[in-house]
Structure formats: C-alpha cells, structure tokens
Amino acid sequence: MEDIKALDLEALQNKLTSFGFPKYHAKQIFNWIYKKGVLDFAQMSDLSQGLRDKLKENFYISGLEIVKKVKSSDGTKKLLLKLADDNFIEAVIIPINDRLTACVSTQVGCKFACCFCASGMGGFKRNLSCPEILDEVLLLEKEVLPKRLTNLVFMGTGEPLDNYEEVLKAAKAINSSLGFNMGARKISISTSGVIPGIRKLAAEGMQIELSVSLHAAEDKLRSKLMPVNKKYPLKELIQACKEYSENTNRQVTFEYILIKGLNADLENAQLLVKLLSGYKLAKVNLIPSNPVNELKLEAPDKTDILLFKDYLFKHGVNVTLRRERGRDIEAACGQLRLRYEKK
Image (cartoon, rainbow, N blue to C red; front, side):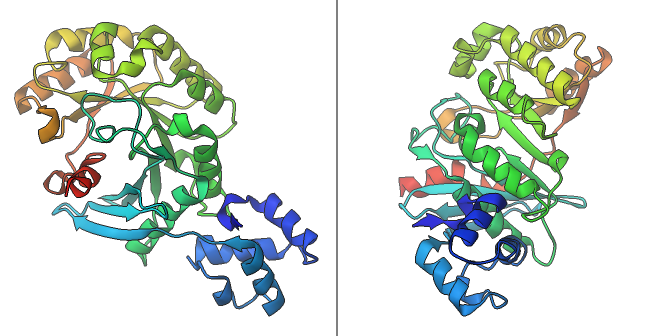
C-alpha cells in the first residue's frame, strides 16, 4: 500500500479514474488532508462510501507521534517526533511578529558532519519521504490553530539537497493552492553547499528562497567547519549561487554562525567582504553560535558580534543579525533529539 500523500494531483486523478471514479474527487481528498488536516478516509464525509472503502483498500495516510513538546519563553516551540520505524526527528515553530515560521527536517540524522551542529552527531540513518515531510507540516499547522503557518524553511535535521526529489515534491505540495497554498517566496531551502542540487533547483522555475550555510570565507577554515567544502569549495559554490540568483532573480541568503575564536574576528569579516564583492543579490545572516555542550563551542562577546556586523555593513554587504530564538529550550538543530536518544 502507498501513502496517498506521495501522489500529486494528477497522479491521484489517474488512480481514481482507474478505479472507476471521477477525477474531481482528487481535489476533495486534497482538501480534507491539507486544508482540514483529516487523516482518516472514513471521516471524508463528502465522498461516497464506495470510494472511501476503495481508498482504504489501496492507500494509507501516515502520521507522526509527538514524543515531546517544549516551548521557549520567546514563543518558539520545538516538537520531537517519532516516525513509524521508531526513528526520531525534530520540527520547530518560530513566531516573529506576524509571521509563524515552520522549520522542518528532511533526513533522520545527517551525513555532512558540520562541527558546530548537533544533527549529525548520531550519524545518518535515512532520508525522509515526501509524506513524512508533509506530516511535519500538518502537525505544525495543528499546533498554531486557529492561525496558519506563514513561512516554511527546510532547515531542520538533514541536508535538504541530499534528499532532493522528496524535498522538491514536498515543496510543490506546500506551494500548491490545493495543498498548503503557501507562496514559493515564503518557502526556503537551506543547504550546506551541495552545488548540483543548487543548479537543479535553479532550473525548476520555482521562486523558492535559497539559504546557504557559509560560516567561513576561506577554504581551509570552511573545510574544517564543514567537510562538504572539500567536495564543493567556495569559489565554485559562490559561482553556483550567482547562477541561482541570475536564473531566479532571487536573493541568496548566506548563513554565517559566529563562533568565538574561530571565524568572528576582523580578518574573517574582511575575507567575507572580499568573497561577496560584486554579488548584489547576496545577503549575510549572522547567527551567534548556540551553545552545544558536546561541541564545546560558544558565541563571541556582543561587542565582537556588533563589530563584525558593522564592518560588513560599512563595506556594502547586505547584513542582518538573527535574533536569538529558543535558547532556553535548546532549539538548535538536533539538540532535543540528541538529549532524548541519550536517555
């Protein structure tokens, strides 16, 4: 049997007609799942009993179990979720002013082993399927009712572009007027710098926002922080990002975690200015490092953070400083899962 959420509208219409039912029922089914959050065919009351029975014979609708839920004093909420195979993932809701941003995972664990991230500490286990990713969104939607999610980032556990096909299917469902009806510009995919995935995404014709984890402006340090840089070095990465901007006319955001004693001094600020020189559709988002005890990393002093930001600004870089969110609940990727699996 197949999870019905794995089908797009056309595929579901084809299934229905092969069963002898009109294809318009596909839109009704999508409405029940994505608009009303109903995950039981028996409750889809505007479908005939015969169709509901046929759906139950041929499909299932997966769901996730909430194992733990923690909420920060700033409103950030993190959910630890259990998959059908007893693996765990995390999803986060981040409220900022009028926005409600969902942060979802795309893999169980991560194979990219960035030295500042807790996600890969337990190793890589498997990719999430499109239905599992959509299950995260459905759960987060329920958490914010009667409001709706306004933005979504593929920035939780895992490397989204290492699970390209399933992530793209999920993004299309989230964007679809028959799915979650979220504008493409409200959807962001974050990557550690997987160049083939960046180029494939640029060719999709979707105006999805691209966010690139940079964290260093020269190859030696970036390779130390992010082993992926050995395969996809900075010069090639920045060129791929420029091509993405040219093809989509979208700004690329470069995430830069400021780590005390590693990448947060004036010299590194100068290297970053040089790296992005002439790249008009680039933005740098500075992020003070989240403390992760196992990784023994800490954020720079506030003065050093502001000096770094001011240097970029004065040299023409579009720069923002991310507000700290969820520090009191260890909201950084992988931290809650890490704690739970250690018990």
